[in-house]
Length: 400
Image 1 (cartoon, rainbow, N blue to C red):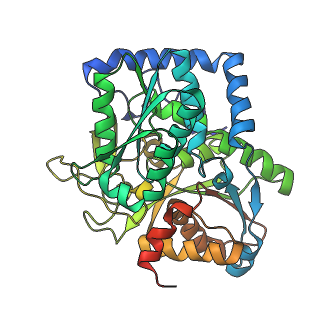
Image 2 (image 1 turned 120 degrees about the horizontal axis):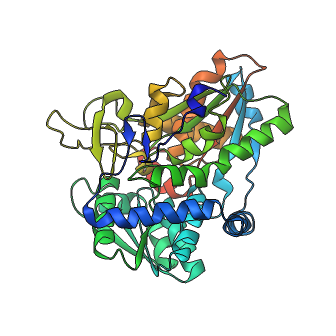
């Protein structure tokens, strides 16, 4: 195991080196402490783990396949390309892993109401789904701009019984949706659990969300050993807040032979307010409960972001990713809107798999790297979600 994996990360205060922590109003300190205590008790409770495993398997559809993308591999030349098919999960993305884990926690804590934020709508749909399943009230906050570009998912959430609240403030995207969810939680903390959708926010959310998603990497590790009898050479995943990426990366952190690349949203290029690539144009700051890399101006004001992908259109990145980057254990790059769209169509036409625009950023990086690797090397690309939700938006941009 590498030194990165063996350190006590995060520490008892939820810090990944200089990142993470708990920066919240006083009203939320005790609820977060309660959540932390309940989560760690649940982690050690075999009954909780058995119930979670049961629902992940029987309701969500785990394990997901690790699929050899033969035609994409042949087209690019070089490394063998495997896709971790999180797009085949119930609701269409990896988000259901975390939503299921958190709603079981909410039940343990006696909460009767669930709130969530969502960007692309996949976390909102997953939350609405588990709330319907367990009969809990559900409110989902979504930026008004994201509501327009992800109308299918808005309808799905409402069909599942959730109240979808369009947020008209600011840029009308994910950051504003998180703000409104946090305001709601402060007001209704006794009855309400906030199912935060990514590996961000105040402790214990980054570690909790990571652990609910680590099943992605644990399965992928086992599956590639069964299929190829060797570990992959490279892992690739898109990074917004970073939940799908950390879920894939975490079980491989101690394997120094396995490189890891996270792909941020390059938007229209690395120009202020035209992208959401925090490691390219960001700096250290505090936003929405945690300390990490943010897109902010010299006065600390959060800058506007842009991405063709609503799920990556966020001004900050999960603290564990910032720490992995500092340690040199993971590399972070970006794909522009144009490259993501090219990858969207290439995977669709070569493999018959329509990826989410978020996942298309990871595929774009695979397209860059695979030709420069040898045929005995292996890439695992996390296909974090399916692209049905994006077809209408893509059709407005590209004339077929």
